[in-house]
Length: 204
Image (cartoon, rainbow, N blue to C red; front, side, top):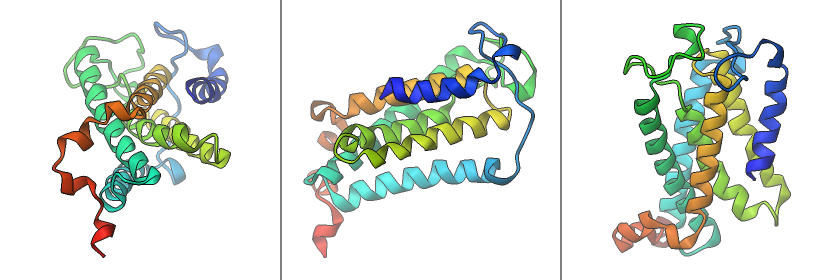
C-alpha cells in the first residue's frame, strides 16, 4: 500500500527534479493554478464530502458488517490523521510556497502551516482502510488512490504545499489508515455508547 501510493506520486515529482530544492531535494514551487479541477472549491468539496461520506456511512451501516466496520475504521483513521497533521503544523511551522519561495523556511511564524499537508493526510487516511480491506478481493478499489494523488497535485498548484509536505501527508494518512485497520485499535467504536455504532439502517 505505502509503496504503491508513494511510488506513483514519486513519478510525478520526478518531472520537477531538475528544479528541486530544499532539505529533501525534491521541493519546487509550481506555477499557481486555481482553475478547473484544481480550484480551491473542488479541494474543499473533496475534504468535506469525504468526511461526510465516511461518518454518515459509519452511522448508517453500523459496526456489525464488513462494510460498516470499514466505515468506522476510516472515520477513526481520519480523526487521527487530522489531529496528527495539525500537531505537525504547530511543531514544524513551515512556510507555504505562496508565502515565499523558500522550502527551507522551517520553524518560523506560528501562522506557517505547510508541513505536513493536512488535506492530503485527511483523504489518504480515509481511503486507506477501504483499500486495505477490499484491495485483494476487488482490485478496482485501488482507484481510490487517485484521490490523494489529485489532492496532492491540487494543493501544490494552489502553492499551499511543497512536494515533501504532500508526501509526508500521504505517509501519515497511510499510517493512520493501517493502524485503524486492526480491530483491536478501534477506540472510537469502543468509546461510543452502544447505540451509536449499531447502525441507523436497523431502525427502518
